[in-house]
Image (cartoon, rainbow, N blue to C red):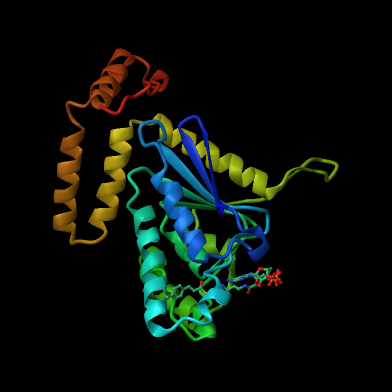
Length: 277
Ligand code: DAK
């Protein structure tokens, strides 16, 4: 039995962590299943991924505390490496990954969300790095990615205090890109839940990304990720190479020719059905 499901809708793939009874907490098997799901994505047909959690209460409530409670030092290090390998492969995955955060994103849950490219959440989402309260440090990249995303000062405050924050605060500090609430009609009836609106927005964004030139989207992801590791001089050199690599591709030729054909009214320019060459 796998704790992860995978489905596709056109060029969008949806990976769902599905261990609802334990609020989708990450044990070794869940980590293996996540890796297997990413490995199985057909990059010839899928151009953007959504990562979410099953149910409407939790995205991922962290690493599995039961499993971690009996680890030796060596096992703890191995568990940390297993998670880090999975999270790094998400961060470096060739196509964009959107985290649709539908509830708790604590510890390893916040860390896996931060390894995605874009974070959207429902208004019941709760974020935090509670590890120091459990006697450990964040172990799946939390000390590194949180500081890069929200700045060292805010990251240190969140990690040292182990305080959970709600969606609005996560938005204010730049941890999430957008927050979704339920839609209510004039009579006060809920016409769409926050989670439904979250998933609809994630799918719409993913489909929009998937409609853009895939070579350029992949190169942009790589340029941003690689550039964040180096000086600005080295970063622009990385960008130059990746920018150059787009030329002579079918995407570039078709994309620019399409614009030029419609140049009298640029608003009418539609992205062509790009191929990968
Ligand atoms: N692990 C295992 N089970 C969990 C879990 C978790 N992180 N979170 C929730 N569950 C389970 C609960 O035990 C409960 O199971 P049953 O008792 O029904 O069998 C079920 O999910 C429902 O949870 P609750 O009954 O507690 O639900 P509530 O609504 O009352 O509370 C909650 C929801 C999210 C506030 C609460 O469950 C909670 O505080 N959960 C723990 C959150 C947490 O502290 N997460 C961070 C874990 S630490 C490292 C590698 C990795 C890491 C660190 C180091 N290295 C090796 C270096 C990562 C660490 C973490 O992620």
